[in-house]
Length: 462
Image (cartoon, rainbow, N blue to C red; front, side, top):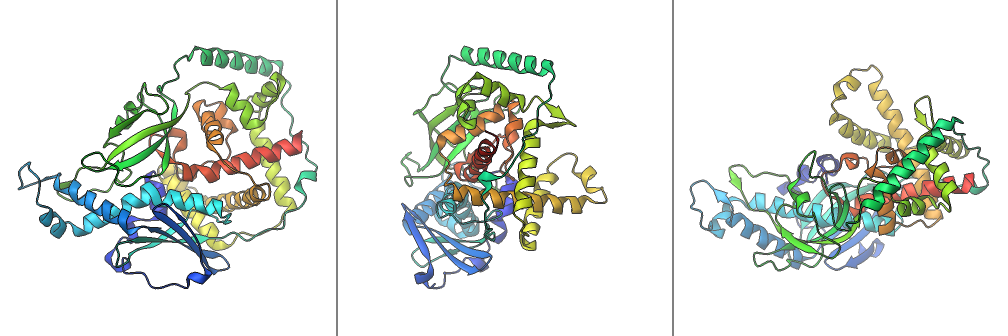
């Protein structure tokens, strides 16, 4: 996860000794729980707008992670000690807090948050904004409990939207646009056919699983989250990306360069976890895949493909036909469904939007505008309203997200022109310029929204 997403969930900010106490007993009769291997999920409503989520990591896994982290610290470099192993007693005495923080962050980033997001969707919890981590507690047996607050969107009464009258915005009639689409399609098809290599190349998207290993390269535990990564070896070389080049689905390798924890320890450099990386799927790089394109938009023939591509070639007032269609769809749906978004949800979303804007080079220019905060507030409310209505339709239509949906979605980021088709993106992930792994849990809800939006457009324009 990128730094801004971590900041939004605030794992480091709350990892203090004060909130790592033994958890109090809860009335479990009111909780819905689901155990999955070493992780368990439970949730209990605390108010009409808030649900408390608890993800528990089993004591055997937590203890193994602690033991391996101590082992890594003893192999690190520390001024005043020789290159031989540093005594573990010294490490445990002087770096107790740092070890505890690293263990909790490791489990949070590599397992807990992804598991939470998967289960929230599985339980059809209508949450708005990312979950907020409030505390991490350890019981007498060594199990770790991650406590989250999850804000809930009010249900809205959906109308018979499939019968709404919708007139799709028309494309421009310039014949030159048809020639551009034909030329684009011919070039992309020819380039795709030249890609005879099914193994991983630069610009490919790769789905992989990561198993944390001990010093003997045996798994510490059997399962961690799956991640997607964009292979980049040219513009901004990434050591992790180079390890994938030339490999195929099913192949594995061991590395210590995959660690989502950027935290540093003062005057000390502990070693990082080893991981066995196993490749699960590959989505080929920069060119159009007709298979993915047809599948995502349910296209039946060449004319359908041509007309769909035209949506990102035809512009009016610097807005593509695709974006205009989406804007008018939401204008129609929000006119038919009048509802307000609670102020606390808008404020949370404003925080997230500001985190995104702050990492942009033009942030100070935006900030200097007199109505800057007002525009951020309006954007936050707009995003939430659109997401709330899309999420409820997704639940109504029983929309699901599988690996093929992820491949189709990520494929569109391979080309600047095709990227115009994407409306929903993970807010706090730099997926447009992805250079770090993105967990499947982060992508799942976003892709469900995109899939639902395409379903709505198809129903209203066919």
